[in-house]
Length: 149
Image (cartoon, rainbow, N blue to C red):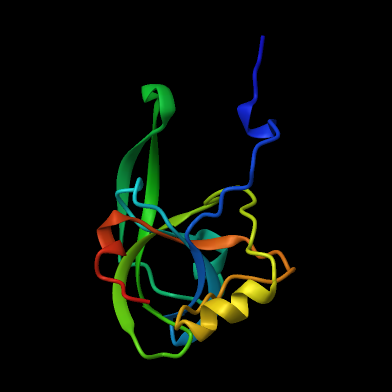
């Protein structure tokens, strides 16, 4: 018997997502990022970093452990890039690993009057609206503490 809990009807949970600007290989791009304190390392989609034509720094072999203690060995290429908020007021240089797929669909915050109310209180959200973009950057515990985006 197979039970898939992710298909159960539950209230939507908003995850920590935002739009950031990344620079690598002399190119810049706005991407959707996910803060994941449960990940020890940070990752970028392999297709995104290839599109930016960034030069690889080195390769690393890691064992990824998931629920239930199952581990799988993976080789990742390491790249250097710069991450900034959309206003370019904050920059952080990161060493980041490539990953074929970061995660499945993560919903965005739907637009509403409350977004304007948050902005009036100095809280600015960047990842809202109706369009879907995949998560291209996962910011893990290795760099999360350095960011003030």
